[in-house]
Length: 251
Image (cartoon, rainbow, N blue to C red):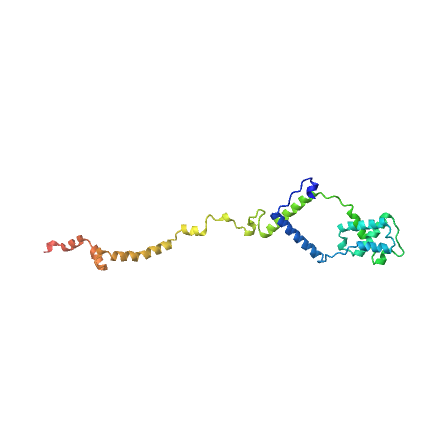
């Protein structure tokens, strides 16, 4: 329909992701319609009822009246009267509207539709709804397509906003509680490796002192490794000379 209105040649349908998404949306829309209708999809068509009622009114030989009422019945399928009224009421409304359009008198004392359990208010409401169908303007499919695309974009943005995402799919900063990734120059691990605690350095030096002492005690230049021997070895020969030559005049 859209291609014919735009005078374009139809192309084969591509079974891509857009086709799958459209198919899923149609299925969801059908489920919603069924839910609103209470899953009552059986409709009793009142076409046979029209013929039967005209036979009761002895008007079945008037082919113009029968055809006009039949045409109104077919056109009313494009309205919502079939889900609002009983088929007997719709049949009476089509006969009522056809008789008024052709100026054919019908029994009024009593009114003929009372015989079929219908009120005049319901008949007039169905007639108004059917006549309103002929006053509809031809829709502009280009404007409808633009409006549909606009609604799709708004719906997609609302879904992303509910998930905390931007329209481009990136996470929104508002959902992170004001946290900015660039607020810290480096990670905590890098800061810990760059900074050296003075306490840890002192502990390391203290732990290394006994090892140094053990290495010094194991040295072959220190003899057995006694602290006294180490002190003697560290004493200077000049001190022994001075002790031995103290006060030479005393001899």
